[in-house]
Amino acid sequence: MMDELVTVPLHEVAHSRTGDKGNRVNASLIAYDSTVYPYLAEQVTAERVAELFSIRGFVRVRRYDLPKLSAFNFVIDDVLEGGVNGSLNVDGHGKTLSFLLLTLLVKVPPNLVSREKKVLRGRKLDGQDAPASRPTCAE
Image (cartoon, rainbow, N blue to C red):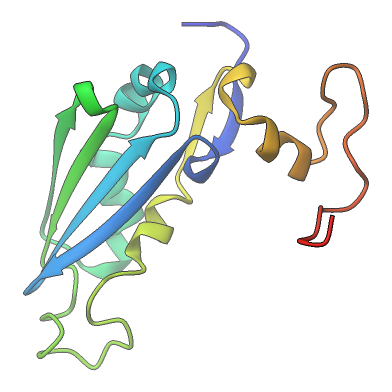
């Protein structure tokens, strides 16, 4: 792997989707580019995900690797405070927990961070300064 790495939140190199069944969350993590997959495989471990979700009082995290899809599936047990019918939690379904997963920081080569994300973060692109403000829908 490359020596020069940048630290970015997962959402800059992958996307996620969660679903739930009872008190269990099923969270997918899918790399935007297959070349980032080995970096994610090394860094987004069940242990790191467990640490991230520790505030939620989970029991166990299991990671299933899906290399042909450049993806992972995380199954997180007992994370929904009893599930949709057994909890006063505002998000009893756990749908928004993918956003929590995407806050995890990872180190990847700069060339694997998408051009659009670099512009939004104010980095230089192709020797030119990125725009001072974020682009709007009108632009």
